[in-house]
Image (cartoon, rainbow, N blue to C red):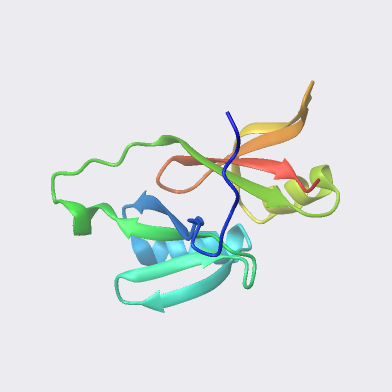
Length: 129
């Protein structure tokens, strides 16, 4: 099956929601401990990422979705790319208080690690290629 050609009207990824219990605490963790930039901070729309780099994480308090909506800790599916020396960057994050649910490891496909935010959301770390 042929792959359709991309056009200016093709979709792109703008944001990925991450459900958190406390947006202010999450904003602090994602910016000060993990080292992402605060992209937007406008009441409901709080996003973190890398300025000028595309997609962002939208920090969504569970309370805004539904008071009964439980947090679902575990794998988020988000992959965060670390530039530079992967193991050194992981050590820097750990020194900044970032919790690793899976320490840096080299697998047949390359290096990876898993970090856990204060709400239990796990994000994959991968080296820049």
